[in-house]
Image 1 (cartoon, rainbow, N blue to C red):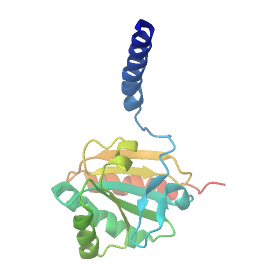
Image 2 (spheres, rainbow, N blue to C red):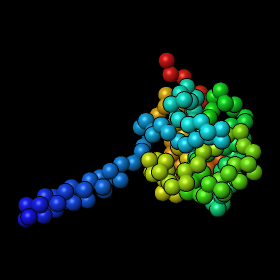
Image 3 (cartoon, rainbow, N blue to C red):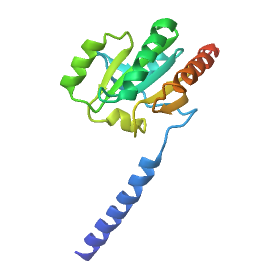
Length: 173
């Protein structure tokens, strides 16, 4: 019996030390992001890899977030202005009920792709700790820029600059 207790203690120690190490991994520029980002309104899986060759703007948002409500229309204007052939904007509704998400999706009438992350699993893979949380992904499928929060004066010009730089890059080979 003592060896079982010792083995269990070793297991617990390994488990406890492994958790912080896994949680500490942060996505940074140049990383390949997690591929799956939800299911769209038609029930199709949305994957970053399906947009290879385009710039992807992935934003985590919620209806109660005032800064999100300021950023989403800007991203929608960029989606419409730049076109789906160059830019794919994906809005991931973060930790809201399915009922609220469906109501919002119908009300917004956006051309951007909307998905839902009711339990925060997708957000966790992207290290989302605050919203809006925007991840720009270059044409090669690598993270180019991450921005958390939104400031009416500084964020829009910074985002437009980032989009222009990424859209001016040559598509991968």
